[in-house]
Length: 160
Image 1 (cartoon, rainbow, N blue to C red):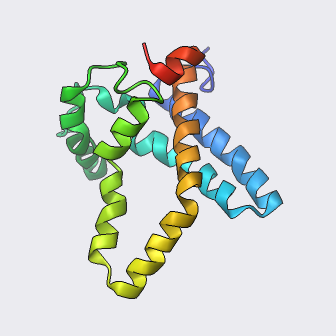
Image 2: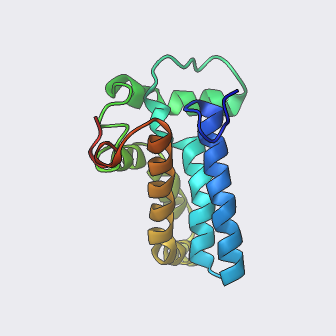
């Protein structure tokens, strides 16, 4: 029997991200640390929406619920440009920034462009205050994913 924490499959990656995020959530609550709570929430969210495995080009945008189809459609151009488990997908040095700027960044920029003045200023101040905590969550999530894929420290940073 394969245990979800040690298997390198999609449910195993998500399970590990939720487990680590839950552990960090309990630490953040006990220490009343809002930044750490943001990091804890980022870990499973990042694994769900911007996993290193978005480079898999065989996913069909015609199957599954609407949100899965939308997610596959969003990442399809990236998946066509980046080969699976390459340095541009499975590394912290190249893969993490490449996925961040190809994907979720638009969901951060778009609200800033659409909101009126006072709400825009509030959102920007939130981004500035919690940006390092979100980045930590993304790094932890990717490092956990790459560990589960069997990568060593050098491969996690620089890729294969």
